[in-house]
Amino acid sequence: MIGSLRGTLLEKTLRGEVLVDVGGVGYRALVPTGTLAGIGDVGADVFVHTHLHVREDALTLYGFATREERICFEALLGAHGVGPTLALAVLSAHSPASLRQALADDDVDALTVVPGVGKKTAARLLLELKTRLDVPELEMALDGPSATVTGDGRSDVRAALVSLGYGPDEVRAVLRELPSDGDVEELLRHALKLLAAVR
Figure (tube, rainbow, N blue to C red):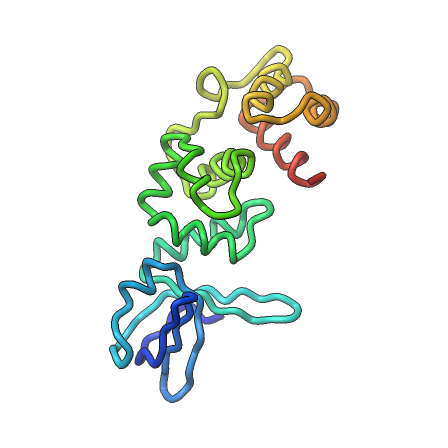
């Protein structure tokens, strides 16, 4: 696993790729726009935190100016349906601080500025990233904070899904898969995963 690079910047491109010479070996890494802008000029000594993404057909290195950027990138990769391209797009639109602020504020609109992220995807990301990034004071898109429901928890989940724009057929289908009682936050998270899986 390659965790960081320290060396000489040989090249940087407008599409967000840098080439760093480390002891005579050139490493190509894709970086968010903020890292690209602040990395310096060709010939400069640079240091980047990295994440090596492994697929069957490719090994791709991603670079970040700060450790916090890398943590956010890896948290995004852990979210359902988010690949490295979308994770990089989120970090190109938001610094780690502004991303955490959007999560704390339940600001769906802040995430929809990212190309390819609609309202439903943004709402799901808010839910998943709060737990992955340890954002305090978790609250759901419900009429109040999350709570353990002793009655029919599905009714609260139904209201939340409708407010997020899901249709009646989608809501009915997913509610059949949920238990009637439990923590509203967990029930809603499970419902969103089920909905994402069938799309």
